[in-house]
Length: 162
Ligand code: SF4
Ligand code: SF4
Figure 1 (cartoon, rainbow, N blue to C red):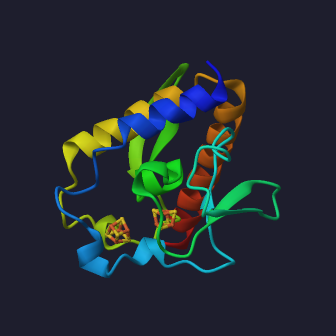
Figure 2: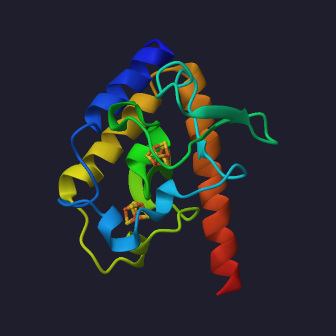
């Protein structure tokens, strides 16, 4: 599948489903949309031409494209990282079998990660489907797997600190 089509499918899966059935930005005054020029939402291959053209695209120190916004965007053209936040579909291993486990993204700073509010089940399922789609193209799969490894490393490190 072409990377742009993978991304369009992921956008469509998450176009009408959100973490809660109401605007969760009311809980935190839209915290995740208040980054600065040094932070940004990571872009998957193929997203550069699909996101809102008002969003700036920078390259981070690892050579990965990140979207830097001014705190507002066309909701239907927001990046995939914004759509799945604060979850991530992590590829886990059970012996020889891989499976996708939807987890709170340890990089996220979001009140929902405290686990006190039950997330919309449709949202969790949609994030899992996104993981399956990201595996359908070599480039999206490569970046997806790299992020999964990064997340697992962060989780291991946090376990060590406990
Ligand atoms: S930080 Fe979390 S609760 Fe706040 S708007 Fe973003 S996803 Fe919703
Ligand atoms: S691109 Fe849109 S959804 Fe993503 S952080 Fe910026 S304003 Fe929020």
